Length: 252
Image (cartoon, rainbow, N blue to C red; front, side, top):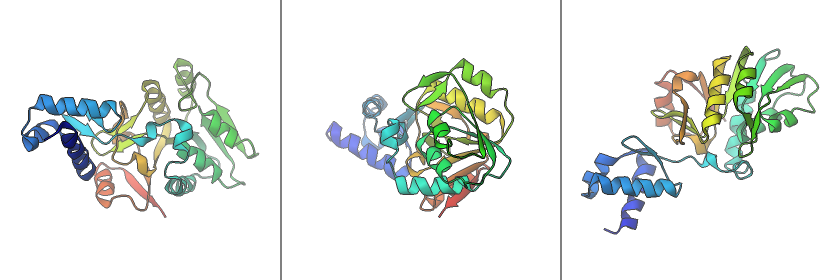
């Protein structure tokens, strides 16, 4: 079998099963584990999967540049965003992470909703400029241009002075075993800081993030309370998430 054929079969198995193990693949293809690890390493370098200890998981499409992600699965993203907006109550202090799904969510907030929003995303802040009843607190720091958010020690210090009702966390991957992941180390630190200062953490999981993983762990699923997903999300995946003690809400 040609290397290219074996790699394609690995990707097919990954798509069908949601994860692959190096040892099982070596037995399946009757090749050494070193050969499989090389295949996985090369596929990871092409951005086609995410290597983890002992195997690989699907790579998240949500690590693409912000402008690219804005049009990715837009209809489903807007449904998830609208359902997320419905979770916010008047008078709350709400922390909103950067990201294309959360950017869509603020557009669905009722015009008469009076809340305080804390964000490290200039895009989120600008999206709320025309909402006179929404108080906006913008967290400063170094601008991470890929995601258009602030990061760094100054941002974490500001976040640690807050007690919030809710945090809407952006992720690039959510997986029953790998947990919550993102594509940048400092972003992962910021997300953990936000979550630690909120009474409730919600993930808006648009389809490209489901059952996928990226390079940097934010934490396990125990960090979050609720996941909002598209109504066409795989029921088996939903059940696996619920078994971890996380509430799953479907956006219809």
